[in-house]
Structure formats: C-alpha cells, structure tokens
Image (cartoon, rainbow, N blue to C red; front, top):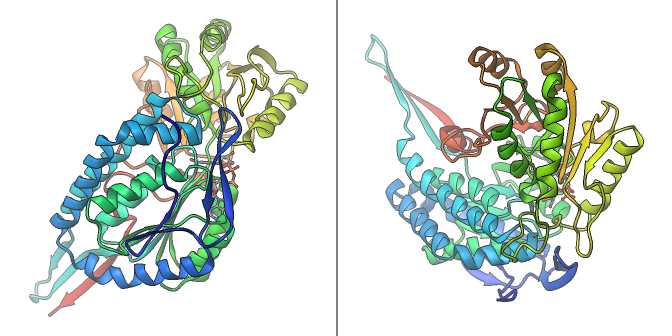
Length: 474
Ligand code: NAD
C-alpha cells in the first residue's frame, strides 16, 4: 500500500484545502517527496479562531458523559484504523511499522482515559460556622492552541487534545508539517465520532506565523507546546503578553545511572532497544549512561554488541528495528555532535557514521565521552548512546544533575535504599527505577528546570486545561 490520503485542514467542521504556501511531505527512508501540503493562510487561521470561540459555550455546557462518549468513539475508530494510520506515519516519519501502530493505539488510550478522568473531576465545599459556604470549582480554561512535534505526531497530539476536549475546551491544533497524513487521520476519527463543528480544528502552517497569530488572538486562553527548549522559551514570551496559561513539554537529556548490583544482562536487554526506539528521537530517551566503574567495560561491550545487531532500514520492512531520522535537519545535526565527540577523545564502539540513502544514521555507541563534548550538553535527539564510568554515588548524582535539563532520569540497581535516595535527589520531573515505562495515560508526564512547565497525563493533565473559581455564598 502506497501513501494514499487527502491532506486537508479541518476548520469549522469542514475539510478544506489550505490557501497558503505549499510544503513538501518527504519520506525520510528515501528522501523522496511523497505529497504536497497546502498550508493555512492568515484568513484560514482567523476562520478557525472565530469558530473555536463560537463553539466553546455549547461544548463546555455539554454533559461530561456526552463529551466522553465522543472521545470513546474516536478512540475505537483509531484502534480500528491503527494499521492504515500506522502506515502513513511510517512513510512520513520513518519509524518501524510496529512502533507506528503502537503509537496509534497509545493515542486511542489517551482519548479513553481522559473521557473517564473528566468524570472524576470535582470541586470542594467549605462550610463556615455562620452557614456560609465557599464552593471551589474547576472550569474549562477556554479555547486552546496546541503545537506538537514530529517524533510522536499522533500520540503527543492526542495527549493534549483528549485532555483539553474532555475538560470542556475547544482546540485548534497545529501539528508538524512533516506528518500531515497521520495527524489528519486523528482529526478524521474525531469528525467521524461526531465532534461538533469548531470544537476541534486542525491547521497546518509556517510554525512561527501560525503560533504568533494563534497566541496573539484574544480568543485563545491556553497554549500547550511540545518541542525544543529554545522554541518553548519563545512561545512563553509570546504567551506572556496575553497572560495566557501554558504547558511546556520541552527537551531532555536523560541520565541513566547503572550500579554494579544491577542484573547486567537484563538491564542491557532493556536499555539498548529503548535507546534506539524511534531512532533516539524521544524527549525521554536514555542518553547519558553513567556506569559504576567495576562493570563499565562489560556494560560497554554488551551495549555495543547488542547495538551492532540492530537491523536498520525502511520502517515498512518487517525486520527493521530502527528507521531513518525523521527529517533532513537531523542528519547534519547528529553528524556534527558525533564528530565533535570523536575529536574530543570519545571512543566509537558501534556506528558513528550516516547510513546510506534517505536520512539514515547508524545506531551509535560512544564511550569515555568527556563533559565538554557538545553531545554531553546539547540534547542529541538521535541514535547516539554516550557513556562514561563513575566511582561513587555522589559523583553519579552530580553528573546526572549537571545540565539545565530535568525531564526524565533512570536508575538501575537492586538496592532499594539507594533507589529511594536517588529517586529523591535527582533533578527531573520523572524517574524510572529499573524501568522505562514512564509515559502512561494516568500519571503526570513533564519536566522541571529548562525541560518545561506543567504536566500532561493523569489528573494533573486534565487540570492543566482548567481554571479554579471560588464562589462564596452567605
Ligand atoms: P525546532 O526547535 O525548530 O522545532 C521543534 C518543534 O517545534 C517542531 O515540531 C516545530 O514545528 C515546532 N516549532 C518550531 N518553531 C515554532 C514556532 N515558532 N511556533 C510553534 N511551533 C514551532 O527544531 P526541529 O529541527 O524540528 O527539532 C530539533 C529539536 O527539537 C530536537 O533536537 C529536540 O531537541 C527538539 N524536539 C523535542 C521534542 C520533544 O518531544 N520534546 C520533539 C521534537 C523536537
């Protein structure tokens, strides 16, 4: 099956051709242009803004059960269509088909979860001795603009949209231009599930222009962004002018602390596939491996052997375990980081070079990487594992906390007291101890320091689309 889909905008309940510039859609496995996307014009975005404002009063007033029923229906349509949507995703983004299908079903899970979580959202009543009551209630914040990236284009979109819609907000989403087919399929599922017109809208466009227009509009009350720290800071500044609420899910540089009491084979069997999942283009990807000195050589050897066994190729081929980088920008970026680390003394244990055709880069393992290598400081966002030994727990912690990032961190140890100590002391929004399963619908996901602001997922994720009102009644 080839790349077969209509690329349109979804504005005020209608599927429309964008009236702005054209943008190519490129298959990263070949570098070939597979479609042309018509972007939204300024007038298209204005229409979407007006529709989001018009649709809000009725959507916020709709019974939470009825809102939930539409979200559940969208979830079941996504599951039914997971294979065909997954094929679009693989052709647009490169990841192996099994990962793409898993992403679609994960997105469906977000709609199911938030459909129910909204029913659990309540307020509280304070009763005074005078008989006066103070009633504290959550209310939907209002029309929301979301901006999402190309690494998990459906899942990250669903995470924001499901929570915002469940909370009673209307949503205008600007997904990444690289992957319009699969995000369009999410909009199609919501349309087919009966979402009222104007409640959910999808617009593609030049990121800077669209974000300025949406964030600058008085109709929009909340901004949710996932992407790089640099863009996040820029959008925060734009949001400040209108005192708009924000959720910022930004970059990370996850440390992995591996202690000599871990089960080494089991740890490596878990770590290597996680490192190269989605070609390392994951904000919580394990990246800086700090390994206790007694097991460092065995760890590095085992890691490199497993890495060399990874089959790299087109994500539609059944035996592919890692696809290409998602776009042409990433290839020079990764090459520069790897070359810089080599020049500063890092040892290449596996890979280290671009691949052939498309935007491929070999799964790469670099040992003894010094602190001043760029890759140890800038989020690599690619298939590169960086490792070095440590002598003491304090040194490992100091390394883990050295960077301004604070998204995810991982610890591998069988010592429960140590796990508790490090879990408390590490500076990150999420910690995985002997696990990577940290991105789940019912727990908060988010970073501290320069990795972001606010949480997605769980009750916290729903609350991020609500404001609090206190009503005092005598
Ligand atoms: P980028 O920083 O230009 O863009 C990152 C994302 O933000 C993209 O989806 C892009 O469309 C969007 N964006 C850019 N400028 C925007 C603006 N003014 N308004 C609204 N959206 C805007 O870089 P890139 O080349 O796409 O990605 C490179 C870096 O981005 C990576 O190295 C990584 O650090 C980061 N990134 C992070 C995530 C994540 O999940 N946190 C996802 C993708 C990219």
